[in-house]
Length: 233
Image (tube, rainbow, N blue to C red; front, side, top):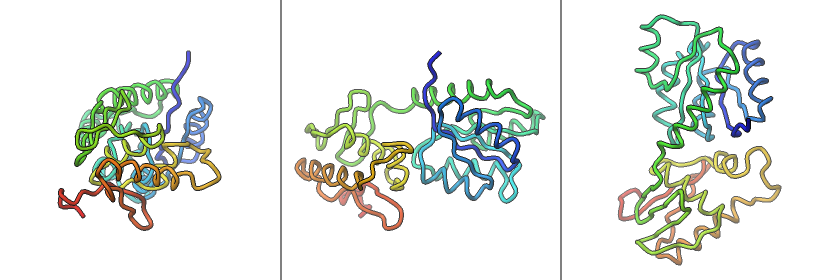
């Protein structure tokens, strides 16, 4: 059976469990990043785009519930959080779900079941994501890959549409440059500064559509949409 390729953030400080989980996921040809602390988990989850975050509750620096809340509040777009923990009492599970978790697995767990739960969360999240997104004068129809600006169609390349959809989904927040690169090309980005070229072309098309300067650069971070009539520039 063909499995979709997913991007997973594994937040776990136990080295043996980390090796087992990351190795299994990579064996499925999935991308698996790792964070051993809550602080690094929040940093990665808010600068990269993941399909699922696997989050251990017992971390050395920050309680996993606080990490979950921070990710849900600060990530550019909603990412499902699957909590991994030895806490198996009902009260612990209830606290986890109330803290923002989308699913809950107690240790020890079957790695095969873990993969199935990741697929289900990612699929459900994709289905729930709006097929139409709007920001300022922009309206994007994601399934049709069609963009309107002030109600008029905008001609965009495939990559330009991907970039604009990520910026629209994150609005009014910024999307990190590294997150855009990873979303577009995974772990194999072009050698040249291709993102800069695509952004230049995208800005040019938006300018022709009557929306100049709406993609702004945030120094040392990335890019965001900003609209003068929306009061955010």
